[in-house]
Length: 118
Image 1: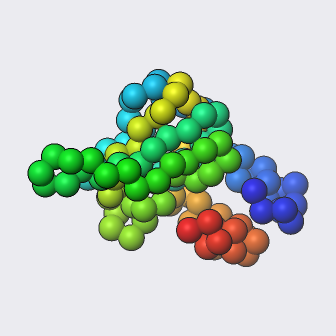
Image 2: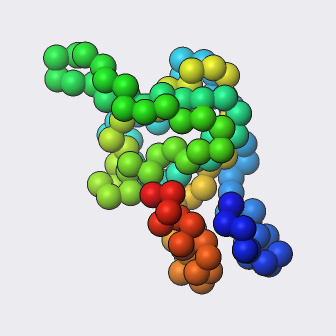
């Protein structure tokens, strides 16, 4: 979270964050080709992101631990570019990107924060 949000701005952010979602070990949060709708905040545990090559081989492209964002790779192409797989039973909070964009338009500190994490 950006450190300088007012109570009102923080309440607006809380209002757009979707409820916590549990993703069991080995399950995917999203898959390559899924429509990009949200970014996710990893709350508990960790994920790996993987791309699958045409020959079927998988390549790990990243690891995401609690406190890190997940799903930002879909912003440019409007679809997810990889699979996000839970390495353990995990919890994430979804943040609908269209609502986050609206908030960033109104709250400069939030916009700067999103730019930094991207």
